[in-house]
Length: 215
Image (tube, rainbow, N blue to C red):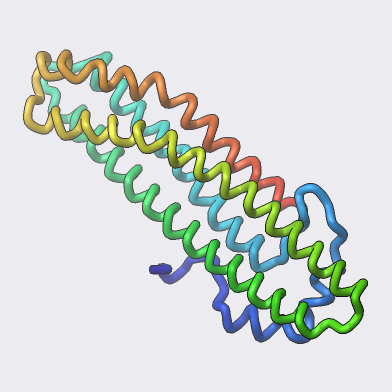
């Protein structure tokens, strides 16, 4: 479900504009690596980039709160644990918003391709049709490259997130110095994984930046 306020235009707006200006859009920017994206797709990617940047910052905050709890435990562990659970809750919200934005962007891309396919059927000149098909293929290649990086990030982030949740789950019932010792191996896995997750996220952000700035 797409929430209000997301940077995603409706499919009606895309299809309505395609009849008069789609062929011009195909040829107004030359093919490059990566391909310069249609404006509506670029808007969706910009929304996705914003979510990725917010997600990056929240990962740092969440792991920082866990590190504070594990490395500098106070006599009363409750405030530090509450800080950690608070940051983890925000991180989970950010992940969900990023997931929704990606779904919304996927929808925009599919609708753009539908409009292109419809326009291609109406082109009579073979050279024009070939050029338009190449433009579509270049855009597909650019977006597919971004999606591949997102899939890689997601696959590597799932165990990381599960460890973060396991720490919360265990300490919720054993918030003691002994409990910290018990969960320490899991916390250490989080610390070891963090830099790799951040690097993968940076790769996604960089690919989005490159595509958006090619406009």
